[in-house]
Image (cartoon, rainbow, N blue to C red; front, top):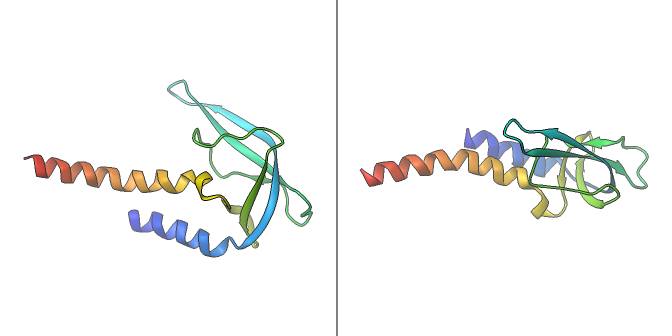
Length: 115
């Protein structure tokens, strides 16, 4: 499973080569089952009319944007919905995927060592 997560992010890094500046035009909200809120930014390219409005693929509570914020993206020229934030600190999905893969392994190893 971890291998597939790694391949997903590696492929995205390889494919997302076009740098564009976007402006946040909307922030969609969704209520979580446990009462929290999740947010999904909607971006509009600034000065790049060849790309449509870019909708983030997933909701997150880790990255929050305000309407009007400008962000640099690295997008896949063939599929604008596949993108990375140019600033690595905003790519929180990578961290979440790594934790989801590694945390169970760490717990199992810790359990085995404590026995």
